[in-house]
Length: 354
Ligand code: 5MM
Image 1 (tube, rainbow, N blue to C red):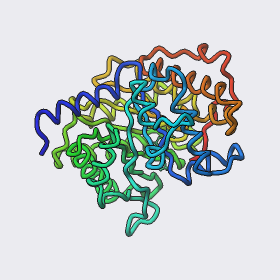
Image 2: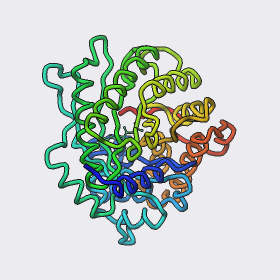
Image 3: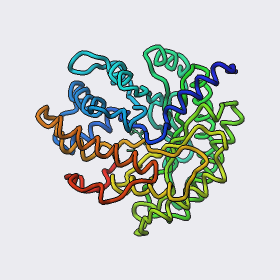
Image 4: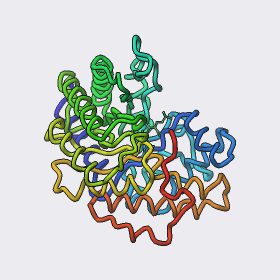
């Protein structure tokens, strides 16, 4: 059980994570995923290149205007900038909350190998205490839900919901705000309507299990997928329809006192992720703060400009700051496509494959 002072501290951190006009940078790619991002720019996946990549993203001048928190990977929380300042210190100096990915990746779900469960509950409390002592203020755990003709199974949704609840409670007991991420994957040829049903079932189960475990909604943040047509569905992804479907699910499943919702981009293009977030706020005011926690949709163009070269650092950071600003505006319903002028980049708004 957590006491009143602990709840007050969690609430304060959670509010800061979803402060008006700000969102979260997900920079928690594990080794393989960074390898895929680097392969696209012909860069070797070495420890120092990963460090330089994170330095590019985490030290863009003034990014604290748009970014409230950054999700770090275990390696990154132990690393430092080229001027020997730990990344945690560098973030704190910009009033940005350091967060940490605490799941340990995916495993096959027994009996239904196309579905996944998330590893990392063993020894979690000890790891959370250690990250808290290093300056982390929130922690993220990602579960994935797969849509096919036969999935998701109720059993898989339930198992992931239980694991998310166990992790969330352990976080709150350790003084870290849980960022609870049940990602409904974009892969597949399903319709928007099917995704809406799956998102509803998933979030319903997650919040049932969180309540059963005794996790406090005001001290947690939901990291959600949007309801989207599957990427091979051929169905157009219309922002207003996406926003309506997503918000219908939220209205049915989210507790009133949840601290806030942040979206993952999940393979949407950069512009699409911004437009869809903006569309949510055309239906406001929403009952909770709703903002972004993108990885690819904040990083892709900047990474392509950077190319792993110091000479490109300033230009890459300008592109990153531009995307952060566009999403900041979208999180307030103030985005407009004209604002992209002058920032046409090599990514062209195309989605990066996972
Ligand atoms: C950065 O991507 C995270 C998963 O990385 P690994 O698969 O390497 O562990 C992921 O949890 C991320 O935080 C969210 O899914 C959001 O990322 P996108 O790219 O979907 O916005």
